[in-house]
Image (cartoon, rainbow, N blue to C red):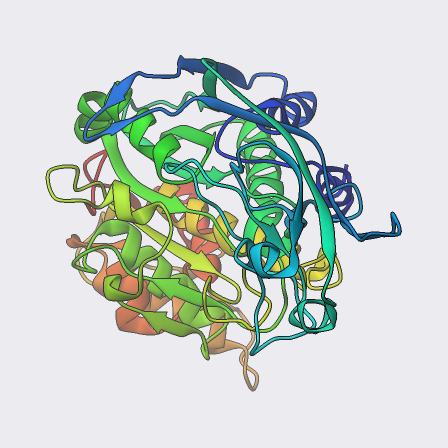
Length: 427
């Protein structure tokens, strides 16, 4: 299934940090990648400084006027209810109703996305234009929701490689019907999983996580941190990767991990006009993965970054905001990062002085204009293949993309001219 088609299927599901929507989403992802393992952690479990809350589910919600006309209906848009709202069924006057209404005066046509995970209360969300039209009178408000000691769910897949060292890729599945902020990440990561599984040989092991934001990442770290600190050499938090307006890069906490280096290198050639953000602009699960004492090498490549586009956390973040082309662009960037990591050894040429390329079929036998451009890339690579520079460093120095250098490396290795350095070079 294409990434956009998968997003369309997932879009109507009401997700939160726990509940039936998360499980339904994980089951659809498991259909696409059957190796996905779905885990459950019980409500009340302490995870670092947090406690997993009771599970929340919702069946129905609406506001009706005195004539029985429904002004908003959860069935029409699941953003109409504040996430984790407690149940309510009563008549209220306009003054009381307004105390439980959320809207966006600065964006009067959009429904806001609002949650209250850790304090029991209820609320409704509507456009500010609708809020302004509310008349004096009484209103029937209903939220048919429930809390129970349940579970928090997440899915993971471990794709083994030759090395126990890992590349970690994480996305979240906890937001209701928002396309770029929510569904683009899981849809792109599903395709990345399929790509990784298709590789006949993998240098690294890949750890892929589909969880819920914040509490899900914290729960996963509580269970896996020791192993991840030992093995993860690079990581990416995948979010907001569906539109086609730009590319954005969010640094890790200090911005100098292997993940940062590969992101900067790939984006330099893929989309030089990309927007760069420091860790001070963080907002997704890199907050947990890069936290003091956790210190995993995790950064992010987005399209339009969370919090930086007008439709963020509103009903305008719908399926019209993302596209197959936008999703494909993000997928290709991450594949380039993966390929760069797979090839990121320290290389050393095997002979002294320049090798005789002609006798190995690596040098043109006929001289004509522009024919030496490709040869120049090869000879420049050779000039810095001294066993001290990894592939990212060579690419940065000679100003040739890793994507272009990979076939050059393959040809030099086939000609028995190149030695790869230590297995985990470049960390």
